[in-house]
Image 1 (cartoon, rainbow, N blue to C red):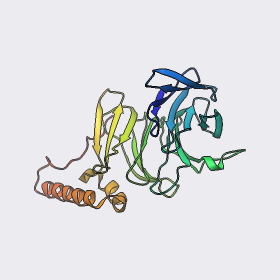
Image 2 (image 1 turned 45 degrees about the vertical axis):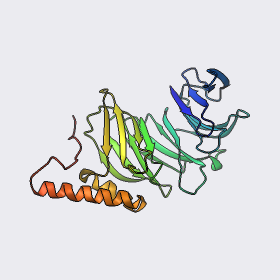
Image 3 (image 1 turned 90 degrees about the horizontal axis):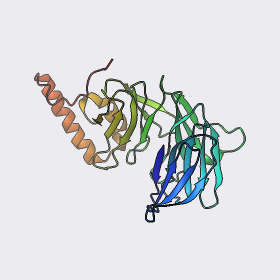
Image 4 (image 1 turned 30 degrees about the vertical axis):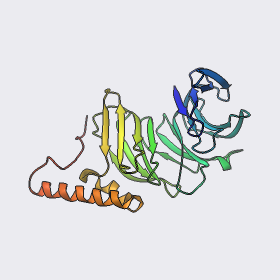
Length: 261
């Protein structure tokens, strides 16, 4: 149901399965080297820690999100979710250690957790009812601190700023002509940090540029966190698009598709 490459030891792969297990694979030998059974239902999401090679994040239909030290198999943190898990990912920030992660659920919630505060009746850092449908997709920028893009089976895509450990909704839109949104990935390219790919139920892949005139609210919100050359390039594009619009030429506006039913 999910896979994750280890970014530190990239010969290892983790997989989450419907049989309630997480398996660790040595891709060089093609063999399973470890099986973890810390969940009691389907494992929907797995994600390796970006720098701690033995720390694995997983989320399940058992309505929990957990971190496990794969060296011992011991659970390092465990939190309850509001519904069946959809996605889980680590939160990375420039110059800061990573101890927090996000989880999304089928009842439309996005929640942030801090593994240092796990135990007892621990609660999330924040939890937001973001969508009417399942929060089926999310991606956190590797280059723009706090930039989170999330999508739902209700065909809505939203952009949030979570830099201050609280969600600020920057944009909400429909009309991507992808159908129900199943997956989103923000570009890892530092020269194009405002590009995102979106996949949905109609079987097509949509590439969105948050640096065009139709997305100016997003660009303006995150402008101070973007590299200077990206800001200059984007400002030129927006100025050219606005000039084209004033001249009655819509070919360079860069707007995304209109709303879908």
